Length: 207
Ligand SMILES: [Zn+2]
Image (cartoon, rainbow, N blue to C red):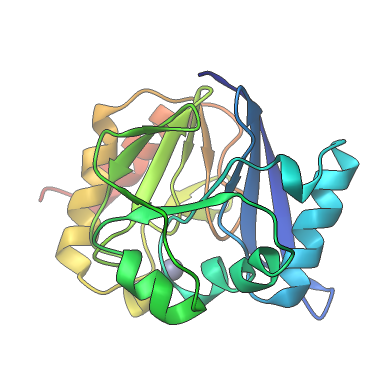
């Protein structure tokens, strides 16, 4: 059930500015994490799958880190291709995903559940059902962390539902082991992720 390799799919606004990331994880299962902004993001994901010698039909499951439009916006167009991949989101987020996309969530996830070789970490705050995925030495943090130059930043307070909970979720991530950190917006860190997180938590000050 191991995750072997995680690829970043960068979605750009008007083909120019990188706006949000999706991820394709290869291993025993082929896992898509988040779907970008819109129909163009869906095409972008299919193109990236092709460049990795996969097809959409090979995808086992699409895990959504949270229901914000820029993370679930490509889901409908992907599902309309008629391929049988499952859609997974945290139990507390599933209804919002369904409302935002019109697509049914097949798997309602809980904290610590295994899916597609990843362990789910429940991180309420940015949204009430936000999650991260841990696997293959990486943390896929959704919008609970952001890229910040060479390091990491916390969740954007402007777009976060419950700021205190979001901050507690950042601190909670210190309980896990990972080297690479992948985030929804920006570049994350390729290695030294634990240290980058510790630095961010130190900057946040005492809770
Ligand atoms: Zn978000």
